[in-house]
Length: 282
Image (cartoon, rainbow, N blue to C red; front, side, top):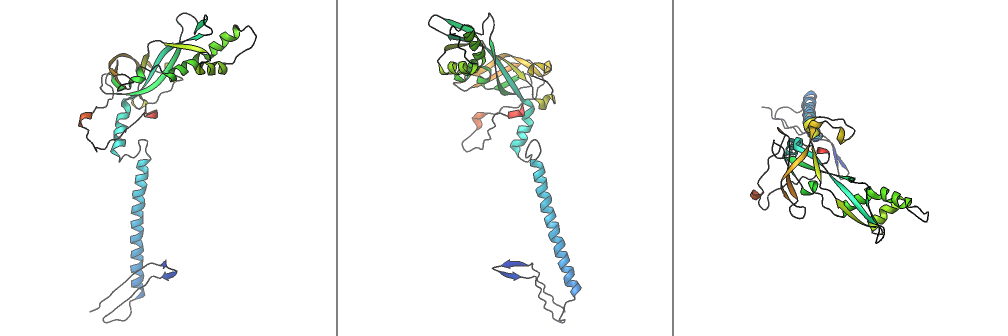
């Protein structure tokens, strides 16, 4: 009876010494193993290693391909949820008219823009999400009711600075002229005392291009009327200083929507995923 014992290894370097591939053979009745047999074993081993390497490479390529898709890593349940919700995301453009009264002296003040019924159209952008198929949208209250804070006041200063500079230069007695930038800085710094006033805000909702398909337009006013609608009423709201949340309504039906969860079911140590403003998702 012939008993064979084979050991195969690979060349490597350990502490400066080279370990070469080796073979030990023990035989009960024969003293030498044919050379072709050992070569066959070596070839089989190399083929197995090649197959293992190919399988690992294929798995890596697949993962890379998945993470390279527009929606991100589709194996991530959060990414899949965002992809499913994206068509329900909308852009909300809120417009309010601004008026700036500049006090040039104790007895002289002028409101800009001059002329009855004129105002500076201040536009602010935000986002929201359809929560029903019948036009109900969840958004932040500050998106539809911009707070009359310093940021909005500076926006109005920027809009009015050119008209204020023109007025000052036309009425200057000394002949000195002021620039628009100079007036803008003096309005913001308080050297030119002024008081802002705002008209009621109105909001327009624009559908997601994931829902409508690609669009080509020079500006918002050039978009087809079917893909946007005015907010006709506010159903519920909590002010910016409280919860800063609102549910608004537009006259649209059969819309993609997301289902709201119950925040009362959330417990300590539950894993939460927080998703902020979706960027170009709308």
